[in-house]
Length: 231
Image (tube, rainbow, N blue to C red):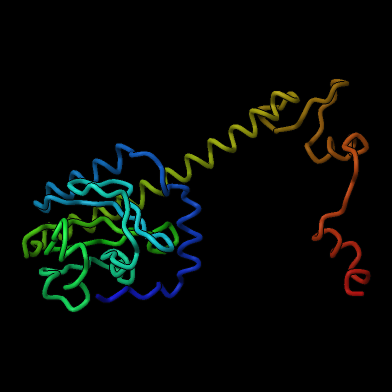
């Protein structure tokens, strides 16, 4: 069995995967729709949305496959993320990389695999949308193009999911600030207790003495006291 090499930008790839905060999350309809469509169009009993983690591949969505994850060492998708397009293996049992893979020699005893990489917004492969069959076969040109299109859609869903999460977090922070002080909906200035309006920066300067211990952050220390820092 051939274990896939690490991606040339593996550290960046894993960092990108972490930013999506999707590993070990609950099933989501958008991803389940994708695996259903992939299985339907490609006419395969198994379809997965996989995310390749440091030591495992985890399945965000799965059709016809009972395990929530597998070791990365036996992952077909770990090979797929090294490619820029669809990886098709017509007969896994006759491929030197996979013929003795436990997923081939034991349950579910798959023979066919096709996977399209799922990329982050900056072009790093996170996993794949893949289809598998227990019989050796291949995909038509139309099926392969559909799988590629659905993998792009999976990347778009991931990015939208991340953006919505960041927006929700920013909204929560703004809501907390607005509960503390009135904020102008137009210019963003704050209304202090005395009724006057000031920018956030001005407000902080005016009330710095109430904040307790004041310190200088490393960046400001380098800017304000360069000679001291060098010494």
